[in-house]
Image 1: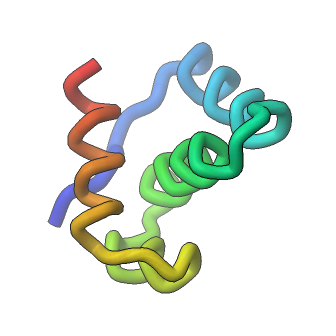
Image 2: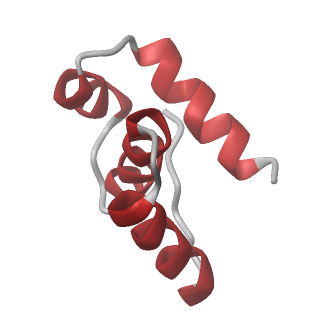
Image 3: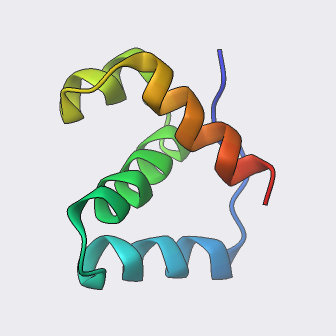
Length: 67
């Protein structure tokens, strides 16, 4: 299972800012999903919350961890 295990203070602050202020819902959802992963939610749970496929959640996590 893929998940975000470590976030720096700066990364967490940036994701929170995106979640609250970004103009497109897709980026807000992505930031929220990454934060949920960090908080221990599984990709399946995140997919259910956002009504998307697990593959999409895996894409979010893969993109975030390769930055």
